[in-house]
Length: 42
Image (tube, rainbow, N blue to C red; front, side, top):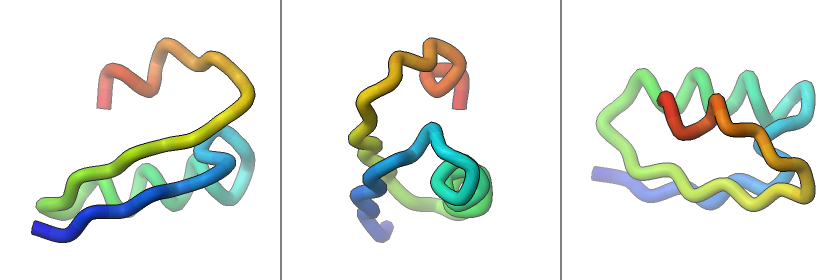
């Protein structure tokens, strides 16, 4: 299992990156200034 730290995970590029990595068997930590409750659903 790989671990990823993504900064800006709610932005345009970051959100697509989170979606792509989510489809793999990996652990994702997201740092962001914005609160996006739908990130918990992934």
